[in-house]
Image (cartoon, rainbow, N blue to C red):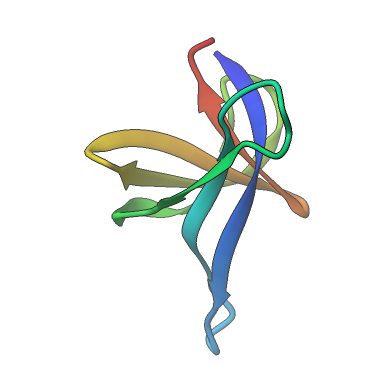
Length: 84
């Protein structure tokens, strides 16, 4: 597993919850090649968890295009756990 930091669109609800809406994934070596992926649903979260790749944060289990991913909010940055 590897930790990959990503940009995230998120909503801040009046109750104080942060809800991720979409992630931005760098498609190649060129930093300008970024694609936006809408989060289809949040399966669970936020939960306070330790990631497999190190770090503690709020974990959201999300679904994008039928695939489940662990998305973490670590202090003030978002990252995905990926197999690479």
